[in-house]
Image (cartoon, rainbow over all chains, first blue to last red; front, side, top):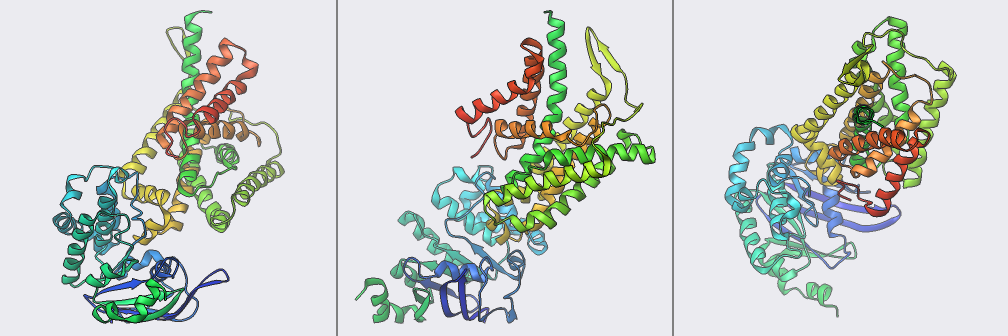
Length: 235
Length: 288
């Protein structure tokens, strides 16, 4: 098991947003975290990155307890996180954004290899390498954010709302790219509100409601599940 | 009024402007990096002048040679400031942040008065003395060298921030702290580096000015005010903006003093500040 999140509680000050959630991700697996707005999906990713601390429970990555590892040490362990709304560095060029993605020594060694690979997956980024990130479209920025995450040579790529505000064509492209990434042995854990879309590409899914895990399982089973229908469509 | 006098005022203004620019760049770097205004910037300048003075007075090192020591001392001072004060107020409310650095300024100034008394001091017979006469314009040698050193330091700072890996990481941290942290760039370390460089700039300016300026515990106040004006005029977080703004302020100060009335020198600068705040609050090169 690559990532094993065991029974975590997360609180913002005194306000609990995640209750007793357990999630795991295997190698080369695509896993979706689903749930309506405010159900704690992003918080879980942020907790795995230690941007938010969890109260109880534990987080294991590649069989090591990482609950206390600071955020900036997690990329070198193999966790890359693409934050919600892309969060590219707006006043830096595409190239500079990518360089910053390869910060730890191992990633720096592989820099030119990674760049060649990234440009193959996202040819547009090579064309735009000298352009400021903020001047690109939403779809291009999302690609840059994912590419920047890939530059850190992740074993696990976490993506928060990858399709937010993107056109259907770009969404289609991204799905293909995700499948390629997984076929190379990298796991993807992503957060998404569009259940049908998410389950059509993911191997497994976890459904959250108000910070609690409601149901989890294989995508095919979840799509048919009454519980999923209840969470997203109401009674 | 002859053109020679005006030319003289322009040269004087330019030389002062380059010094203002470097002081402002230090302030701007720290602000851009972590949204904290260093209200003790003037006191840090005062400390760097005293560093230069004491190295001369106690050890006989001329200010021009003690510059590297002063820079290192100030950089160390910046790191200490970050680890013992700023680190704890990063997430605090703005008012708390203002009070913290403002309090630090009062603390430093009071300690300095206690230790060194409020007397005016100066470095006697520094190596850099005398003046050059070019045509009809007189240029004080220490002033000229100080402004050139400040310009070189400024260019160095600019190249460091825009061309080096650490500079890139500083920019990334300034633009999105969490996104940078996620990529493996420790914000806390970047902040400490930012403080070290920011106060290092002040060290260069203060150390060079020790050659020709009176050194006393309140010396930093006006310089800090000008630095705030320069940062606002140049645009918050823009380093290159500080260069233009510093030069504009230097010129306004000296030309205004010459053409209108020297007793209102400060006024002209603050009129500029008000105009910027009212008509172009983002400054000349600002992003915000």
